[in-house]
Amino acid sequence: MPELLTTQVDDQARIRHYKSKIVLSGLGVILFGAWDMIKIISATVFFGDRRYFDIFISDIDTFEGKLVICIFAAWLYLAFLAVHYYIGINAIEYGRGKSKKRVFLIWAFLLGTMTLAGLPGYFDRSVSDTIEDTGYAAVFMDVTFVLILFDMIFSVIRIHMLKEKTGEDGD
Image 1 (tube, rainbow, N blue to C red):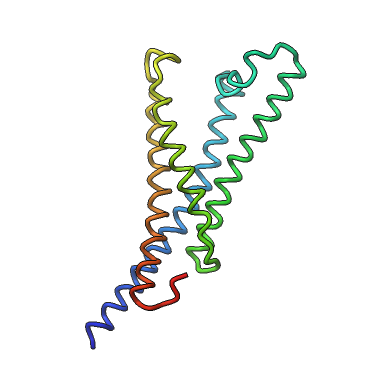
Image 2 (tube, rainbow, N blue to C red):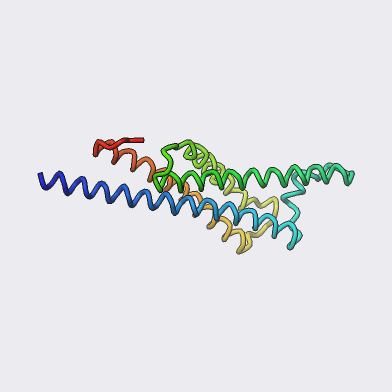
């Protein structure tokens, strides 16, 4: 009987540990979203890196057309930030026990997969013959972001498995 009690205590400690990791991951997702926006804005406005906007406006000659496309791109970037915020806030609420919804995991998986799929773009030789230090830093940041997302997903799965094992409400 004492073994069973010790196992339940250990499982409860693991659940608390995983919930704490989910809260930290949620904060990380929000901060990475803000970082991405700062990176895009600073590269475009302050350093003159126009590749983000040239994708959209290379074939448009009129000022009005370019303005419309720039506004569309701004909305697209805000939507991207909103996805980060949605995932982060819902992960924090889940980790704190305020919510049992896990729909944010679908968005987290999609965002992580898209980020992984975009990694080869940093090494595209058609843009530049060399990879700058900022490229390596960006790869490191994106890999870190993907690890945060997949650790969050893993933690939710582990909590669910531990709750089933202990007979608690498995959400």
